[in-house]
Amino acid sequence: MSDYHILTVSEDGNLFSVVAHFPVPNVANDVGVNYRTALIQWLGGSQTSTVPFIEVAEQTALDVGELLERAYSFNTHPGEALLDKRDRLDALYAVKAAEVQSRLAYQLSYWGYSRDVP
Image (tube, rainbow, N blue to C red; front, side, top):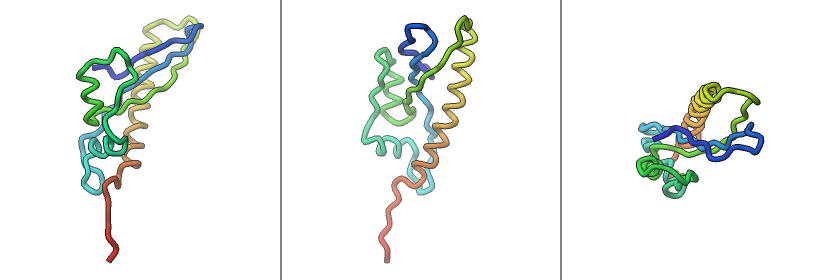
């Protein structure tokens, strides 16, 4: 499985369209619902990847909430070497992964909570 996929590059080669798959923690939220279960319920079912060449195992991980797919753009620099682009893409993925996990922790922290007022 891959952490991210480059789908398209702009005509001048300076803007990449990236689809990333971020891990979803296998832990319970504040009310005891697993974040992966909460994610699938929140999304209304499994996620169908926008990556046309996705591997079966990766799609399965999306289906069960182990991964969350998000798309973003990546700007390159004219003349930048491939290894430099790769290293910056890797660093951007790490930053985005932390952001996604932090947002999910807040958004889904009380997913599944229900209460009847006495």
